[in-house]
Amino acid sequence: MQDYDAIVIGTGQAGPALARRLVAAGWKVAIIERKLFGGTCVNTGCTPTKALVASAYAAHVVRRAADYGVRVEGSVKVDMKAVKARKDAVVAPSRTGIERSLKSLQGCTVLEGSGHFIAEKGAAVNGAELAADHIFINVGTRAAIPPIPGLSQVPYLTNSSMMDVDFLPSHLIILGGSYVGLEFAQAYRRFGSEVTVIELAPHLIPREDEDVSQTVADFLKEEGIDVRVGSKVVRVEKQGNSIAVQVEVGGKVSQTVGTHVLVAIGRRPNTDDLGLDKAGIATDSRGFIQVDEQLRTNIRGIWAMGDCNGRGAFTHTSWNDFEIVAANLLDNDHRSVNDRITAYALYTDPPLGRVGMTETEVRQTGRSALISTMAMEDVSRAYEKGETKGFMKILVDRDSKLIVGASFLGLAGDEVVHSILDLM
Figure 1: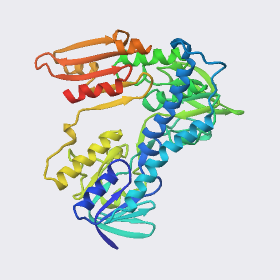
Figure 2: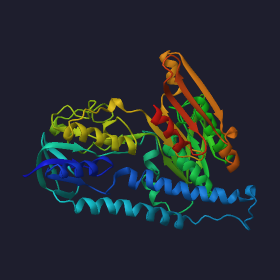
Figure 3: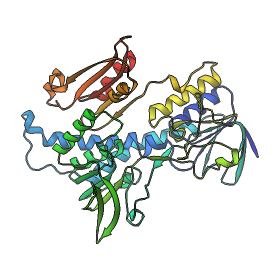
Figure 4: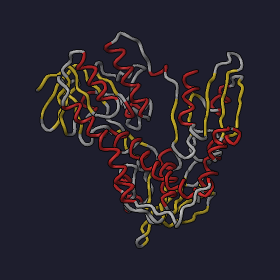
């Protein structure tokens, strides 16, 4: 058994950064990666999807060129093989850069293969056994596949397998009307696909306020996306070369037939084959590793960072997990996951920037609050650019006058919302 000061399992956002800090502190570190360096963000999340969104936006702007006095002769054609090639080219430097930097890091041993626990302070990979007093789990999540009758019998897509698509689906049916589903929906509609979005909840992106969700639904519908909310998928089946999705609404069942199905109904942690039971590590009913405010598991000397701990599902929360662990472990600086302010974005066009509480959450607290909204059509920059969809909303505690939340749905809302986050 090879002895290390620390073992890091997974090279998502938190893992490599922590490995570098530990090595700089004089620790002997082993880091394990079973597939692609960089985790979800680099390979199947932020980086590739935003590259696709950028290509889709370019096609959209070209189609609108006449609105700006620019003439484009002929129809707009999207070369999906070129779109994928561009996406791959954007991803490659990040993935190879992380791999190269870790493999050249003095004091860090990179092991490629599926790592799993064999004891409380022991792990194995490719038949080699490792031991360390400190172990950091950073294994991320993957698409959750719901037990819908017939789904396992059809060739469905997930956010991961969508990365291999280099053709234009004739009719893409998306199960799930939240962040992953809606970004793909708008992008592929702009590429030229017919798109149907099916969401079980009464409105899209259920965690958001209804006015936000309705505005998103409105601009997606304007682009020709078929949005169906309050719809329960009861069966999926093959029909020749097509896929039929049966949906129940108000007790009545109807059918939608498409060429491809994308499953975007939540995420599940990659903890199934990690051997957590061998180490006695506690998880919740969905398999997420349970942690305290400093991201420590129930076993002394073992931490869980990133999406697999259920305390966040974003690149920036994973990075902040690294900061919290490093601060407490190396810097004698007490930092807690409970201190961070919720912030995230939905990268539709226009984007949604969110920080703090929603209006619904504020109302549920019963606290006295002030609310202010402003339509994007009244914002000069948006008006001048001809991108006036959406609105901004800020919530303030009436007594303390502190900002408690904001929703910026509109031009550059995903960036501008940082001004509110900094104030909070």
